[in-house]
Image (cartoon, rainbow, N blue to C red; front, side):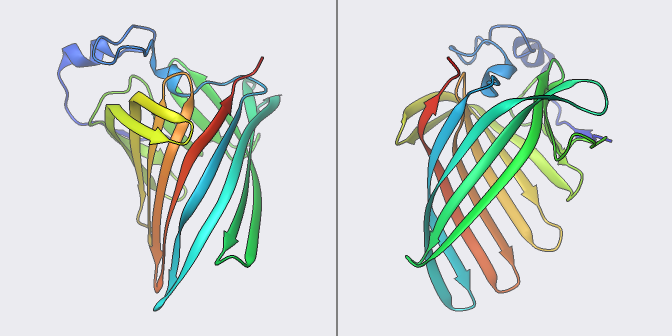
Length: 219
């Protein structure tokens, strides 16, 4: 079950950013769903760079990733979801190539953005509730237990694909069995443009940044 933890904010601000209304505080954004554009054929390309630290040794990581919405499917609960494929190819210290592929199932409703690890999942794999209000805190994911915090609705992110204003900046934190913190910027009508992921478990730490190089919306 999704658990929401919200900080107290003025009622006027909540009304101003309610889903479906124009946001006078962030021109260019129509509603919360604009941060998560979903259509079959949407494709995002990213460049990745960072470092892995193991004990006293550091290894440079470079790579690319591609995110595509491949199609739609029916969830076991009877609603439609989009199939999103994420492919990552990293080079470690110029030698070892790490290739991964992952499929998730996502949708946007009037209540928020929801992701599921499978078509049979009865609980959300992750969620961003609407309306989005700066300062709000919620349970982003239950397994592993991860909190989310909306840091801003007016962030600016400069990446190879350009400079994006009025971004939603979200930080997720997982502290179970180690720690992992993601700080992600979502641009209106584009989606994720930048992600900074830091993690640490025992003697291992890493810091990886992904930046958008190109976005191809569905024709």
